[in-house]
Image: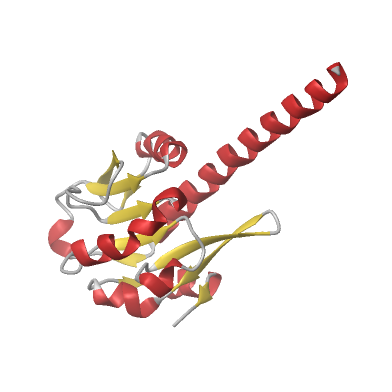
Length: 168
């Protein structure tokens, strides 16, 4: 009985560690997406705002990064929300996998904003995300839809495009 309990506890600890590692990788990817996207020059005097909807672990990782990194000359600010309505003006909005059902509402609400919408769920580019993370075989990959990104008045650098799986 103790052996089974120990094995279950070990499995739970392993899952938590994998989730924390995934959040760290996603945060690093988001930083690279931000650095390799053409942002409006008029925003250079404002903080670079990343809003995370529905992913506390990712928000924590981004807040740690925000203490030491910038996007060009812009200081990074990380905000969190439980829903897609009423979000602050953001440069990047990350929609966690648990909130993926809200993608169409997010895309509609942000239609006139220069924002990069990134999803933690596979296949969300078909619903309007610019980038969707795709965990595969223990690795973190991403899908990218340049058309969805362009609809928001942004252009992602070729370096990012070539690393992702392009979807249309």
